[in-house]
Each structure stands twice: as C-alpha cells, then as structure tokens.
Image (cartoon, rainbow, N blue to C red; front, side, top):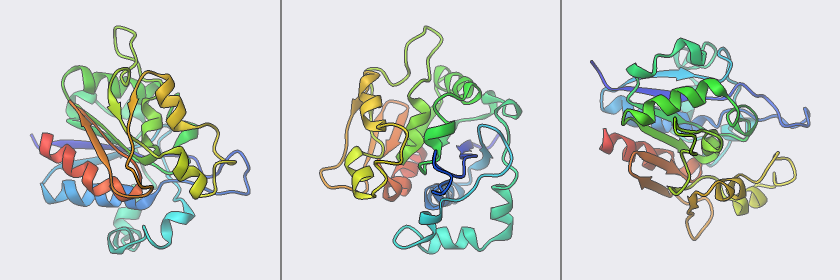
Length: 227
C-alpha cells in the first residue's frame, strides 16, 4: 500500500470581522503536495466540516504566490480538490501515515476545537504515525489530547507563526488569540528563527512543524525523510 498523506485545510472564509477575508494559504499546501508527489505518496485532503476550502487572498500575491502556488491555482483539477474536501468522519486514520495541517489565519477559528481532527491526530500519533503542521496549522495541536489525557504538544519542541510575524503582517488586532503564547501555555517548547519569515522547521520525534509559509517545503521534506 502506498504511503498516504492527509492534508488538512480550513473551511473559514473571514476573520471575526466579515469585511476581512481569510482562508487557506495556498502555497503551504502546494509546496508540500509537490514534495510528497515527487516521492510517489498518495495524498488526500480533509477539512473540519468537509466541502469547500476558501483561499486566503493575500496568499495569491507576491512573494508566496510563486510558480508552484500559481500552477495549483491555474489547474482546474487541483482547485476541484479544494471544493470537495473530505469530512473527518470520512477518513480512516489507519490508512494514514502522516497528517499535515496547513495554515492561513482562518484555521485559528476551525482547527483548535475540531473533535474529528483531534481524534484522527490522536490515532495516527499513538500508532507511530507522523503529525505535522506549518504556519498557523499548529493551532490544530493546541487542544489535541492523547488517550492518557495529556496534551500532544506538552513537553515537545514545536514552531509555528510567531507573534512578531503577526505584528509585521499587521493582523495582530484581527486574530482571535496569540497562537505562540497559547502554545507555550500548553507546555510546549516553542522555537522560532532569529529573523521573521525565514524558513524554519523543527523535528521532535514524529512531530514535525514549520514556522511560516516559507517553511512549507522544508517541513514536508522533513516529513518525507521520516517516512
């Protein structure tokens, strides 16, 4: 059976303020997909509610809207994948070797408390599979508990979009919480690059996390190496 990757994307299209759109940060999915595709892995996409995953408008602009992201955006078959994502209850965790949480500020609203995603993540982790996230995708791990009641991230090294990067992106007054601070509050050993927006990935056993959109390729390569 081929190695299978489960990508997780958001269903949310805007911040609390409906006048500010958000959604999936396309390059994070596109870059990871390309890495895994190059290794012959099977890939499927799930979202908290199933169905359409809207795109973050800012992800369709320079600098992250590169040739790989543009190629995905210009491909009707690839875009159709984002219109018909699976629901968590349509996924058998036993068939998944690695779960990969993508980002975009939208995930801050529907990833943290998705019991369906938490259940899948717990099952994959506890049988030795790989749990991965990039950028805001690590919000999915904030409240994920293992069978013994402990938090998956407690005592483990992680990275994800830094608060300084939120400020520099001028969305610090729009986001619903400080993800970096919340991760630290859960006992995780949060790490980040010295400079904002540079590629940075952290591996702690079977937990692989990337800091920002520019870290998507490196994070996926770390996951592929473990697989």
